[in-house]
Image (tube, rainbow, N blue to C red; front, side, top):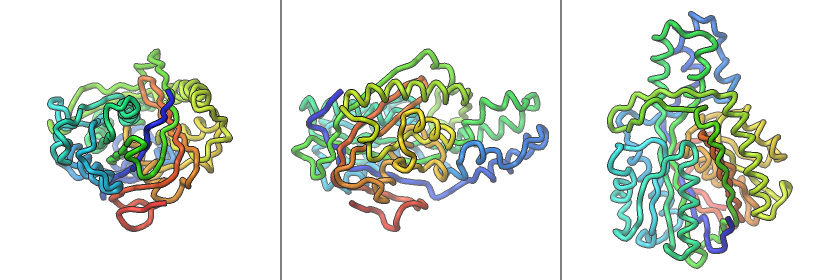
Length: 370
């Protein structure tokens, strides 16, 4: 897929104030660790994740999606009545019905002519939303689109800790499927896209590539379809080792198509942003694609894996901190369970970012521009 008329106009993020460290999670797992004689520090050692964040109890995904959407709109100064598509792409949603996008649309005061819906595709929901928005803009159906989402990790984290401590039949081997659930964090992100004539930045979406490798759809599964507003108690089973291997293999296939479509070589890519899983995944991914770690930007050490918003949040914070300069070629490299991969090629010019929530890598203040 190639594009001529689509620009990524702004990015925004909202972060929770509450943090929980890997050390604290292990303290809460003391009954399990003591019974199985597990060494302390293994969670951070194996993942590179020292902490992740939690929304306060009772927060709905739409609450924070409205906040991140407002920041993305404010960063551009665009007339919100120009927004013709709203996609809410996170795994977490308020209720099973109606679409969480409905409350976000209402909260943002968007036009009644705006198309809106939820998209669910594990960690790729927002990336899929960006593709859908780009296609509508390229076809001339709309002039601007807002793609956003919010992930809430507290229910999964607390349910997993409780289940691990209560189940006395668990062994060192059988707890592996719950390991990934302990890396999950909370965050919200929004991306605003426009057509080239409406754009103030000229940050052109150049190309995209996708791959589906559903032979491995069973490697990461949530046991229930629940919504945050119903007091969800989720549990998830993940074969982390095989998912990493097959996910990276799928990423390699996608990357070859990505380079052909964009007419780039790996050396042409100035900056990369990958899905934020952990240190081992990042190392294997960059090595397999022939990309340099110093050109990549990470947030997983202090945000954990924030699901569908991980890549967009990392993009927004990386932009805010000056990781990307004018004329850079930028690659967004997404991989999600299922297994699916979406990769986007951007020609960057001007940064418009909105941010809320303290982060170690970002300067003080709500916004920054380059």
